[in-house]
Image (tube, rainbow, N blue to C red; front, side, top):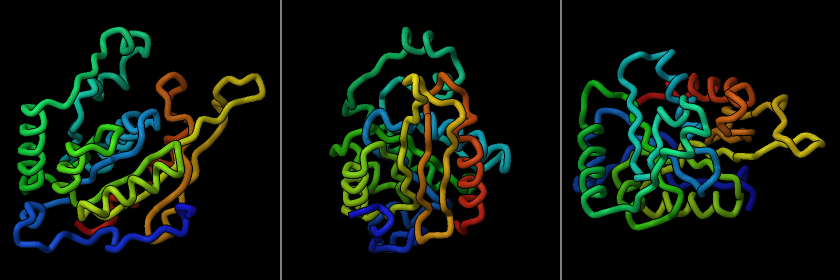
Length: 224
């Protein structure tokens, strides 16, 4: 089924209603960004966070909910240096426990209206627990079938999909990544969709900056 025809059982901006759900005590939105590995999630999140802070300097927070050794530093440092010093780790019981507690605390913080979570790239029990504490999920995937699986994964945890973007590398005839390619998104749909191209650190942000800025404007215009 094409992503353009997919629907979710909830309104993209609806909030959970169960009295036992920790999300009912949140003051703002907690948006988990998920999708398979190598889709550019960390690069996307770093640019979205920058765009949001330019528009709203306070009330926005980015939390890395996976032990992959990445952060804003890895998007600002030289890629060769990042490759040398970045160290991935596995989910541990201690990491999961502290992460889930942190997410609930962030959601309850009255000074935060928007929290972004960087999920790991696999549909694991740990990420299911994170989705149960997220008000929304944004799916970014370089594989359409995997995107559909992430839609189902989020819905199974009561986490409506807020937006769904395809990630794609565009190459020129010489097989190099094309720096002239540009991303396009559509925000006039039940959930924003589109294609974000060349989400890689080597080229800079020209290929995707305008599209992510467009999404940031849309996101901040939505009610909490």
